Image 1 (tube, helix red, strand yellow):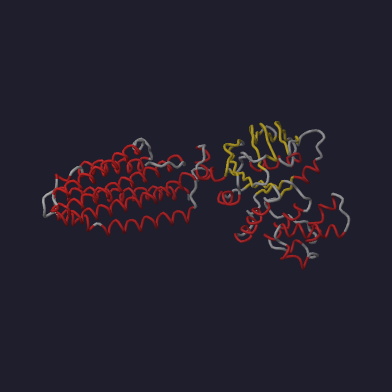
Image 2: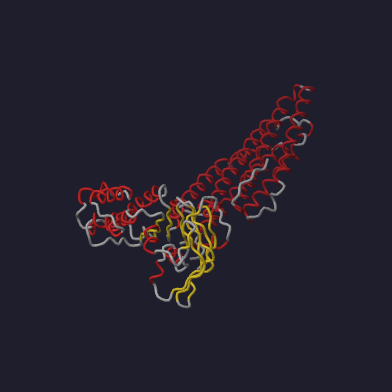
Length: 253
Length: 216
């Protein structure tokens, strides 16, 4: 990959107890691009995604070896502030998970935690984040309503706005559309396209057409290994590895 | 689902091969009709025009349906892309067969000038290229098409030589002008058929490797 890398992994291995979930994963995630991770269930793509903001730290009996750098800094270095890391590397989950609070409070929560107290400043961040997440026009007149009253697609965009509010560099998305209908999915996909102007997006998806539509780079994983990673058009037009070929043409998985 | 799709893809390829063989057959038969001055044989080729056109429409439609319903990727996508080109090339080859059959019918009452020059030889070489390109598509191999650039150059040279020879005969005997002009046309059509064989070969190469090349 010729673009400058924002995240680099070198020989990353991960074990859940005795079970090895990642095996010698080395990859570069280009800045301001969308990188998709595809592969059959249990291949390690979500595990790899969760490595990038050390979310696996929260699981007992996880052992990680190898090196992961964000902006050339090792994220496992002893002086790493995990809260700051997760501010830089935000995450959107499979199911929309808004807080049981108002729309406004959902977005303002992160900046508040990070010390923003000024109301005008918070208002600005909330509006900008909601605009960036392409949901402002739909919610601007009901910012104080409960976020739980929004539709699934709106809730997911709200969660993206919540992630954007703390000004991350990287946004991780773990199957962000799998709980959404095609129209809500299209909105999220359009949003991903716009987000890459300012952010780096890494998306895990089961839907290969989605990976092909939204990403610039695609990594194919199988049994914990990164089999092939390259430009999306190359992976879907003429993959180099037979395993990738067989997976994306539906011959297994 | 993938299994059903791959079965359909296989069927599509089998049907496309039938069409490719029909196109090849029309060209071969038309040249035979020309050589033997056989009007009936020429009429048979002309009658097949509708068949090959019907096949083209049906197979193209099949390709589009497979794309719309399965969103094929990688090799599957390349097989369909190549198949669409094979369909078009086969139709063109068949149509050139029909045009040559028309010529055969038109000039069969007069004896050949210079025993048709090198047209029969040129036709044999072109048909061999078509056979090899069809075989490459069928077997997904590049073994039979590796020399296509050089073979296409030979065909171009033969067309040039037929052109020059025909001019000479026309200058010698104006009564031969109609026949010789038609020989020039036939040589041109055969050369175009070789180009279509090259197109098939280029697309088989793409289907096989994912990379584009050009035979010229």
